[in-house]
Amino acid sequence: MQRWRLRVWAGFLGVVPHGVLVVALCLLVGCTYQPANPEAREPAPRPTHLAPTFPIWSFRTEAGDDKNDHYRTEKFSFVTYDDVLGDFDTVEGEIYLPLPAADRSVPLVEVSPILAGALTGYLECRYFCRRMARRGFAGFFLYQEERLLQPHLDAVELERSLRSSTRATVKALHALVEHYPIDEDRLASFGISFGGIRNTLLAAAEPRLRANVICLAAGDLSYVISVSQEPGVRRYLAEREELTGSTQAEICADIEAHLESDPMTVAGCLDPNSLLLFFARFDDVVAPDASWRLHQALGQPAVWVVPAGHYGAVLIYPWAIDRSGEFLGEALSWPPRERSL
Picture (cartoon, rainbow, N blue to C red):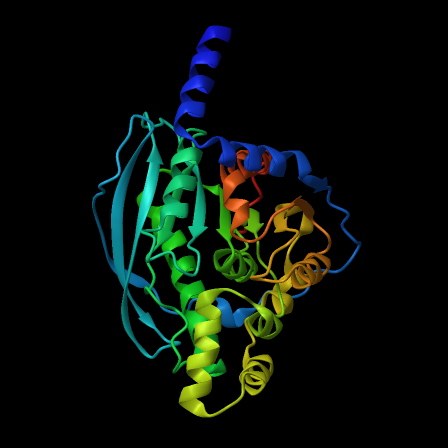
């Protein structure tokens, strides 16, 4: 066994640049863990404006392209009426199912893409689902537009977009539980960056999610947008400034005044014991102070702090997935909740 491990490490060292390994090792050594310190509080009501209203129909599946001895994939789609956008919509996504096929139902993790997920082929979602399939988890994600921050979107339109995506994800969760051998008492979510922001809203809207991992996210989105150095965000502000003649400060003030679906506004309804957070200490995309304000609003759940920037944290993504898998596995082993009649 020891010789096998040595051969694996030798092969890994031969493929990955030594500089990357050194940096990743330094990051791992510098990671700190802060256990949950929940405050005694009465949970706030769940946001009703994020709950779906209309049903779905025409649920369809086809074989996916990504296959392995540990999982199989399927593409799925369904039609629904989007009352937020006032039109019919086709929702599409992919699900990863662990192999061999289980005789019993398996846990399911919803994975939200990053802001540029469509441009990267949902690489971060696929990698997470592949790793979690080895643990016996099914995982799914929904497709999204290539560019979510279009310059014509004002605060009202951004609010409509967040509501629409949250409702679509809840509908997908319900559909997949009905269509596949999924244990509805073991549902969870995972999201990075913009995906973590959206999943805070999702966890508030969907009480069946018993465990949620929120990575590199923050609350107070008007502030986050005003200070973020993410290229897509800076481009959105610059193009909207040119389109409307408003200053960037005015654009962010409009977002602050009209964006109801902010992680800070829903944080109070979530159980801090059901959450695991990851922060990057030198994050210039979502701002560390905004991340810690969200942590406080969520009731001080457990959090890992990585000594890196927003993008540098990708070097320890496999390690973060392992920590997330351990957390989800433990959280979803709780006794099933009693169903209401």
